[in-house]
Image (cartoon, rainbow, N blue to C red; front, side, top):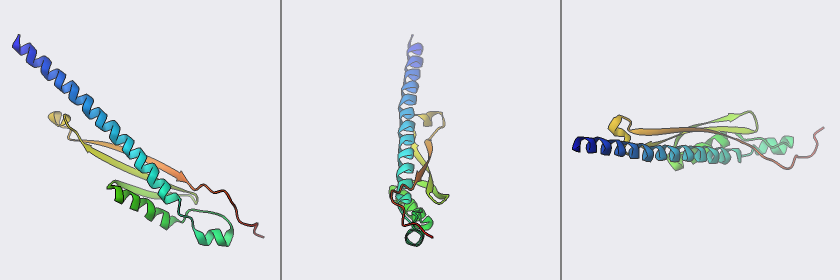
Amino acid sequence: MSVFAVIITLVVVVFFGAVVDFEQKLEARHDAHTTAQEAARAGAGHIDLDHAYGHGRFVVGRQAAQRAAEQYLRAGGHAGSVTPVGTRSIRVRVTVTRPALFLPLIGISTLRADAVAVADLTYGVEGPSQP
């Protein structure tokens, strides 16, 4: 009877550990999505002023947008990449890793979540008509 109790206890502990680590994975995924979205927004807010004043159109300043998004990622301690997409968007890819609490017993020590977000520059006013 004691062997059966040990086996059942082991199964319950493994199941409980899997549930706890699955929750860690969900948190990592949520953090990755949130970070990617916020970094993309931070980058998309940087307008190319020369283009806006010269042509009357608002476009994302590529270098400033990329630096701002990368700075946001660094400040949060996240790994990722930033790429401008067209003239009005920026794409951010983020990877978040968390240590597994119970799964190292079966050889899984880290939980990884990846996310991608694209932010578009929203504008409300076009400049005067250009001849």
